[in-house]
Image 1 (spheres, rainbow, N blue to C red):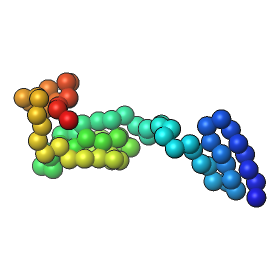
Image 2 (image 1 turned 120 degrees about the horizontal axis):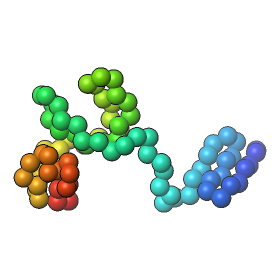
Image 3 (image 1 turned 90 degrees about the vertical axis):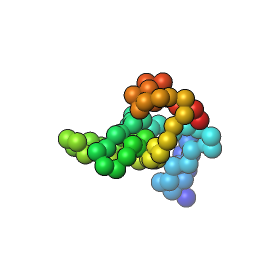
Image 4 (image 1 turned 45 degrees about the horizontal axis):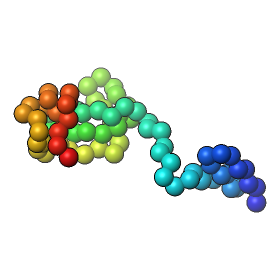
Length: 80
């Protein structure tokens, strides 16, 4: 068994373990995507190819409060 201990992680037999509660870096920016026929989605941008995107940790935005328009949701957010 091999062990490597650093300040923020421990590696045992090639597997990294990170302290619980430590925020992991995000893969990409948080984005709001408005589609032509599939609704509005919020998530982390994984990749983009022209008009096609791949999101991770995505949620569909069905309705919102605290903002009158979708543009207001983008700039000011909604009520959570």
